[in-house]
Length: 322
Image 1: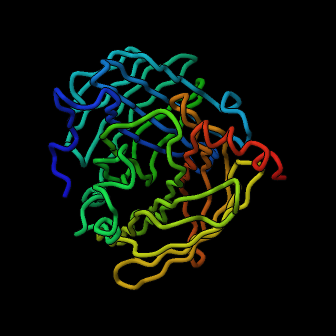
Image 2 (image 1 turned 30 degrees about the horizontal axis):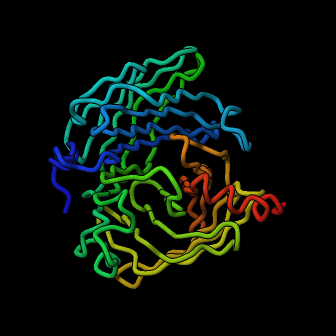
């Protein structure tokens, strides 16, 4: 169970030097085919912090062809995650810890935002068997040591974005997360982090294993939830398949079944995508997509996390894709 204090640091004086604590806050503007991500990766034992602020608006392989990127790798680590300002112009305040954030940013090239993230449900604890039916089946406390602690939250996001001088109203439903634990930077496991929201009343979020180099079929179900009318239900099973252009996801189909036995089938198609690398050792094949569930149209994001080791080990198989 996630408590308000889980929005703050969890490291101890004797924590591993690779200890990481992250905050991910996404948002989007469907009519502009645009989505954004605020991603903070702190390494408190080393005293450094990476921060990525990216705005994506097109289908491309190259991250630098997107609308705006401010990626900085060696910023001073904040003393607290509840209220901090980084030298890149980002300020984050947990106005209601674990349930509400205010994010303000003053960037370059006439780019800035002021956003409010308000949780639509209690934070979903990946490691709590009372919330996640898969938690008890895992051999360790989390699927990966990077997520010794991890929770996901679907937010109502409101505010304003100015991107290269153009003003956008932000009013969307999107899903972010918070993680803590040791995180190596070589040969990390491959995973799909996926969610689609159909207004405030329905969001489906899940983690899937995946071996991109071998198959289009998604792998084992790891975790996930259905948020429906303010109630959250853990997902007990899921299946999915995707189409790709080389490694870039273009669309697919996902079906999930939750603890009520209720099944949701969704198809989706990418609106924008690229190789996103918020820190250099890993790349995320990120796509922002339009989803359909029984005629309801929604929007979401997937991030296919792949280590550089996996990509180079399987480069010929991946390049052979059309």
